[in-house]
Every structure is written in structure tokens, then in C-alpha cells.
Length: 119
Image (tube, rainbow, N blue to C red; front, side, top):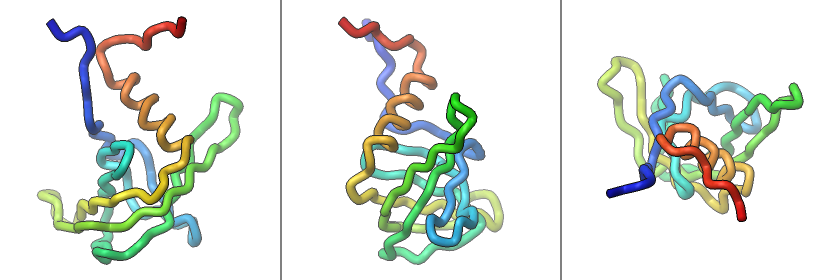
């Protein structure tokens, strides 16, 4: 019997907003995520094979906004089943530890089993 649910990606539509790091304008929402990539859901058709500077703004328990900056390449972009919405797949270049911790936190948040206590 499987004792732990293994999830490669998490559906996060309309949960985590993604911003352009340079302009601070919203680009869309995180659709799903893994350690090496992500899917962005947006109203913009993005240029394939272009590099993007992405930013997450996460609320912290200290009341401060915590930023996670990523450099990513758009590998594909296609129209979603929802009219005027696009899904774009990205590969990440050297994702920072904060992003990997976010993915780990999301994995545990959406899994059925609590984290194991450290020994």
C-alpha cells in the first residue's frame, strides 16, 4: 500500500500571481509548477524561445512581502480552452532555493499526509 501521495505538479490556477520583474506588471497566474519548470496562465500570448524575468510576491508570516525572482525560457505557448487565455510552458534557469522551498511547501500543502518530523 502506498503511504505517501507523490505529486509531480500542482494545479494552482488563480492562486499565485506572476509578475514581470522589470516592469512589476502582472503577467498571469501560476498554473502548475515543478522544480525545473512552470506553466503560466495569462491573457497574453508569449514569445516562444524568449527568456523572461519572472517574480512571485508571497505574503510572509511577518507581514512583509517576500520576492522570488526567476529567469525562465518560454518553450511553448498555446491558447487555452478558455477564450482569450493562453498557457505557456517555461523551463527555469537555476531556480533559487526560495522557489524550491515554495514547491516543497506546496507539495506538502496539497498532499494528504503531514510532513514527517525530523530526527
